Length: 391
Ligand SMILES: NC(=O)c1ccc[n+]([C@@H]2O[C@H](COP(=O)([O-])OP(=O)(O)OC[C@H]3O[C@@H](n4cnc5c(N)ncnc54)[C@H](O)[C@@H]3O)[C@@H](O)[C@H]2O)c1
Image 1 (cartoon, helix red, strand yellow):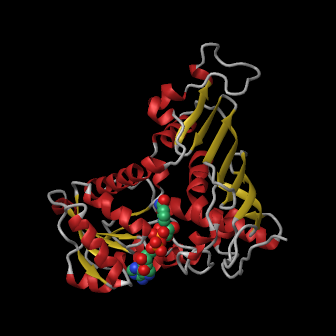
Image 2 (image 1 turned 30 degrees about the vertical axis):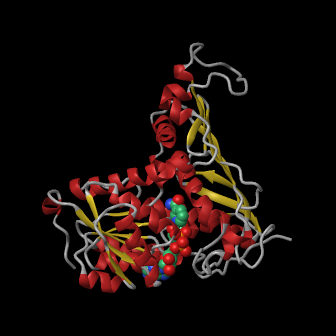
């Protein structure tokens, strides 16, 4: 394995490859070409026309140098000098490709989730541990939204006092055509789950960032408004955290016409609500003129504009404008890690904790009983075939 030399890399652009040129791969291509520290040199897709069509678009629409197109990562690694590989394929292929890139001495960005099961996440962790001087980060772009950064900071600095509870609710709608748009969608093998694993893993990750390590989880899942898929479109769970805090997870792609993704965090001295990536509500007793009160009124004393400014405190009904920006920020974090040697904000450990929480939810729904997060993380249920409950 060739460990990359960070000193040399400080002086030149990092040559980057995108593996998987579908919906999110196209977005990565844009983010990479917008980043002055990066150069998009290779596009890989098993459907070679997908890689070629994205290369055309990089050249014509984005007016950037044309990247080479390949039908396998192995060919790209053989032919082109690459520093950083971004894995944007169906989720159940993430670990194999990330390990291949790590073993070839490359830095790696993996789209969320890290993979669909814990043995795969452990393979990534093992390859990362054996890789010296290589950065590996898993996309969880909402950790870079000003709203979630403000909440994490308030929680960690103690401004909310003891954290008592949280709610992560994602009430989205995905039509049947979404699930029909790719054979891998809605399968246990490659999607790894439904509304929680695919759409809700972001909210789960933020909940863990704010509330810490889960202890126990109890869940129900169901498939209620879609057909021809194996996984859930609706899930609810309760979680008890090591701090004693309690939380509710609610994720669905069956909430027509599709509402927002919302996270609430509550403590004895403050509360916050992040709705579609913006800080809808924030109140810390230390900043209230009355110095806190013995009982509160709904929505009283909203300090969200004070915390993040008007833009990031305003309503965001479609969430679209922030998506690119958040990915850009996570890429900047990875570039900084490569240049400086500091750990990226979202590494294998954080991504594995989010995955283990989602898996714990599925294990609980399958068994019909509460399960311990540590047991799931340690592999107790690795062999369990999970399924979607319901009527
Ligand atoms: N961070 C986010 O907000 C976000 C948003 C959407 C998707 N995602 C994640 O991105 C991943 C891809 O999702 P998508 O919606 O872009 O899927 P997609 O089906 O649109 O694209 C996947 C592409 O990967 C290609 N592919 C499959 N196997 C390959 C292989 N072995 N090597 C190279 N290419 C291969 C497919 O041909 C396809 O073009 C998923 O893991 C998903 O969870 C993340």
